[in-house]
Each structure stands twice: as C-alpha cells, then as structure tokens.
Image (cartoon, rainbow, N blue to C red; front, side, top):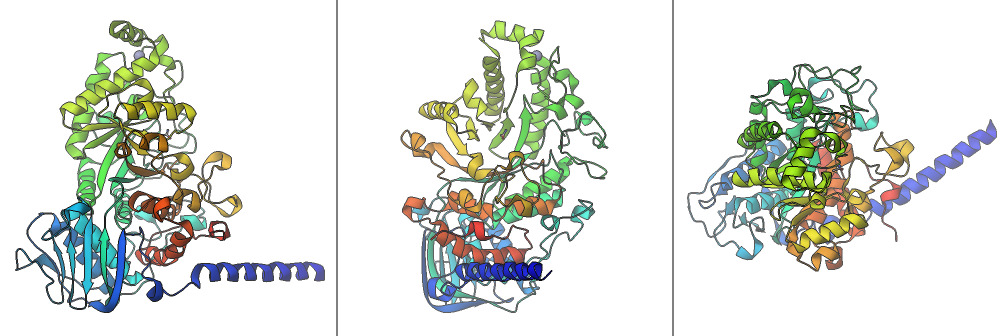
Length: 590
Ligand code: ACM
Ligand code: ZN
C-alpha cells in the first residue's frame, strides 16, 4: 500500500516536472512584443515598428474600386471583427475611388500601388498609428492581408461562437464520446478593442495550390460542417478544399437526372454492401442537394477557397453502380465492394457525361478530380465490352484501357474548359499532359512515373502520406489517441512540417510543375466532426506553412514554428476549432 503510494507520488512528481519542463520550453520564450507576432503561416517579410493602431467597433473596413471582389475581402474582415467585438463593424467602398494613401482611422484595401511582383495572392500590409492599408494586385491578396492583420491582434480577433455546439449538425455523433469527439467551444468573450503593432509586411505564397481534402463519402458531414471546415482553411491561407463526394460506401451529391444515386435512406449498419468501419447516422438523407452545394460554393468563394469536387471513377465507384447499374461490366468477379465501372461500354461514358454536366453547373472550379486510383481492373479482363474496346482501340492491356478511359474524361472536361485531376494512377496509365497528377504515391516505381510525367510537362500536386495523410496517427502513444488509420501509420506534427513539397527529381526538370501541396483527411475512422478537426489541426497549420512559406533551406524551421504555434493555438481556441494539443513527442529536440 505504502510502496504503491510512494510510486504513485514518484510518478506524479515526475509527471509534474516533465510537464513544467515542457511548459517552459513551449511558453517561457521571449515575449511576443520582444520578438514579433506569431504569424502562421510565416509571411515573407515582417517589420514590426514602434507605435500601435487600435481597431474598434467604429473602425471602418474600406475598399476602393479595382478588383470587384475586394468587397468580399473587406466583408470577411469586417465580419470577423464584428464577431470579435460582438457588434457590427461596417465595410464599404471608399469615397476616394482610387485612394493612394491611408484613410485616417480606417482599414483600407486597395489595388492602387500594389506591387505586381507579389502576384495574384500577395499583398503588402502597412499598419500606421493613423490607419491600415492593404495593397494587393487582386482581391485574394487583400483577403490574406486581412488575415495577417487579424493575426497581428490578440487571439480574440478570431473569436467565433460555435456554429453548432455539442450535437454537431443537430445530432449526437457517437454514443460514447472520447475527448477528441468533443467540440472545442470558444470561451472567448467579446472585446472592446484590438490593438495591433505598427508594421510593414510584404507577403506572397510559395504555391498556388494549398489544399485539404475531406471525405463525406465515408462519414457524412452536414453542409454546415463543410462550411466550418472551409472557414478554418481560410484562416490558414489555404485555398482549395477537395471533397471526396463519392466512393463504394456512398454517393453524396444530388444528380437530378439519376435520383437513384441518392436514395432517401442510406445503407444501414446491417447492410452487407456497406464499407468496413462505416457508420451511418440517423439522418433523413446522406447526400447534399444541389442548392446546398451551390451555397457551399458561394460561402467558399467569399473566403477565396475553391471547392474541387472529386467524383470517383472508374474505381471506388460502388455508390455509382448502385444507382446506375448499367455502368457495370458484363461480369462481376470481384464483388460489389470493389465497385469498378465498365470502361468498355458506351453507356458508361454517356452516363458519366450527364453526371459531370450537372457537376460543372454546381462547381465553377477550373479543376475537376476524377480519382482514378486503386482499380483492380480484374473485371475488365473478363468483360466482353472491355475486351472489345481494347481490341477496337488497339490497347495492349487493362492498364491501357484505364488510360483510354482517363483520356476520354480529360477530353470531355477540356471541351468544357476544365482541367482533369487524378491520383498517381493517371500517370501510370498515360494521360494528357494538360491534366494534373495528384501524387499520393512516391515510392521508387511511382517516382519514375512522376519523373516521366514531369518530363512531358505534366503538372503535379504533392500529397505524400508520410507527411500529408491526416487520418494517420499523430503520436506513437496510441493509447492516448482516438482510433486512426490501421497499422499505426503515423504523421507527427514535425513530419507534417518537414515535407519538402518539391522533389529534386522534379525540380531539375521544372520547379513550376509542382502546383502545390494538399493535406488529405480521409474519414473512414472519423466518427464525429470534432474528431475530423482533431486529426486536421494542428497538422494543417504546419502544412499551411509548407504551402505558403519558404523552404527549410531558406529559413523555415520546426523549432521556431513550434514556438509560434503556441500563440496560434490560442487563435484556434478563440475560433472554436478542435485540435490535438501538442505533447512531449512534438517538442523540438535541442
Ligand atoms: C488514395 O489514397 N487512394 C488516393
Ligand atoms: Zn467492362
């Protein structure tokens, strides 16, 4: 008893000491005032100067003529300030249509005098005692200047009442919530003013594609949850949300021409067709109406986020086959769960064109993702229609047939003025150079394919699982973590941060071929929306810096990022964003 008590005391004291050391390492660094604000992602150039500007509820957010979308950037900034103050902050056009200087006491967004060298998303932010000016060639830059201004202020600048509290989307998500399932409801109270230091900041992103993926096909998230997800991307200067709308498990987009794709009741837990690990909530429907999706597109556009729909084909298409069985092969050797459609039959192409026609109507994105990954292609070897297609088109094998299918979809999208995106497999089977390859495989074989595609001018987005798969575990202490990907595959915060998105073997050919990076939040194991956020953050904070800021060789540094992150996490708290609190294992090594 006594021995047990003593060992308990020892453990307790050791834990306290370890906690204290961790606390000191994280938090007892020089004050922010002494070393500058903790901005995430780190801008290109930050000069903090003497003096302050005080933002209050009466501060106006003004914009000049120029880019019509400056109004969106100004509205968003005024909206966030309104939440921080608990009263409305006004945004509106400046009387001086072409203001070249600060408007006393106001925050001005303007294209006048913007530095063209900062590109379409760059900006300069100048804070003086008498006002703030954000100059940008395009509205997107002004929007990001506004985010940086908010980050110069105390964390309460990101205060946001939770859109949904406790019961997300109006529903209880898991019967026995674990800590990761509980929302991080903001406790921040409205403030009377926000004081920001005088500063001159010049900034632009390293990459144009700064994305995250979410997967409502595996666990369905409501449209409000998707909007929250978009809002959280925007405050990290991320600009693409790829939505994995369809898979073997479900088809989540209303297609008016094919209502059978979206039955009112989704598969229930006892249905043998359901995917492993899939939980279906007791919702009236498990799909988004076209009107809901259009409202999501508008919501995202106001935050300078593009929704890239991913409609999976020819594999991961069980949801499609349930609604449109005429897309299937003449044989089915691999069972319904494999869900591969028939690239031999002409009806398949007709149905897919009809579906995509409706998708293009909803999603104005330049990029349309068709998946194209992980096909066994076994049915195709036996299917009469596939075999005939291979013979007619002179295709050597089923990999050639996959390439033929992808090229036809790329041709269709090309004609509509859009660009096809597909996973690595489109590089393997041979596609058009205009299409974009999203690289989740970077093993030796895949590297050869990526290198060959790059040699042909193919553009790429990098999402290597070892750094970007946020369904992987965040810590080797799995007993402290909610269920994540099998085999304990792991992406620690440090690993997320240490991604080198531009492989040398592509850089040698043309560094501009890598459009950017994407974090991938598959949802097979995410049973609640707070858990999705817990998996996403703070790894997405690290990834935002990979996507926006300099290479490590040019000064990006994990220890320094980790230090800034401590302040940034207070912003996530104020915004009500759930995240995993860093622990010992995340602490930078000396
Ligand atoms: C993938 O992980 N199959 C894209
Ligand atoms: Zn077939």
